[in-house]
Image 1: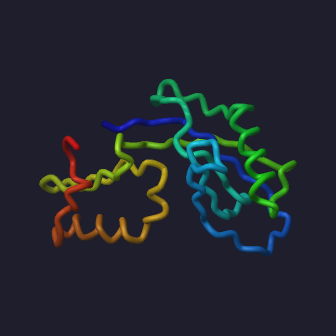
Image 2: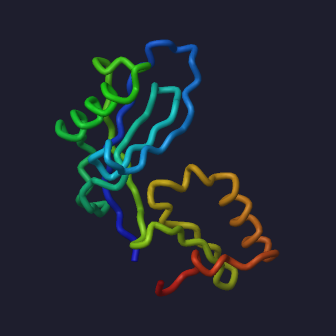
Image 3: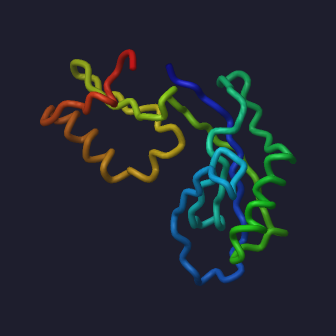
Length: 153
């Protein structure tokens, strides 16, 4: 089962545009109350977002409207953890997360069809490895790892 949510990341202006920002994941812990935060540098500024906190949506119910509360949580996070960003210059947006119940990916081949879905908001971290796996599935040179296969888990 795939679950699609409308998430609300935001871009913050860097205080020093010459600094390259790394990608990061801040997992929930004693010092972090949310479901986790991810971030990365981009052409639009330093992008940060909460992990899988948005409402479940469909193409018909997605509204593309960032919420004030979500933006405020990201501003507060940036004020505490990201001293290199200007928290007065923030642009919120929405995006979609497609997640599986166990947060594993769905990567498999059935006949001539290769499926890659449900990257649960963290597939970007594994882009090169996932691309290689999917290419090998398309070529028929490998089988999908059992944990990623279609079907009940």
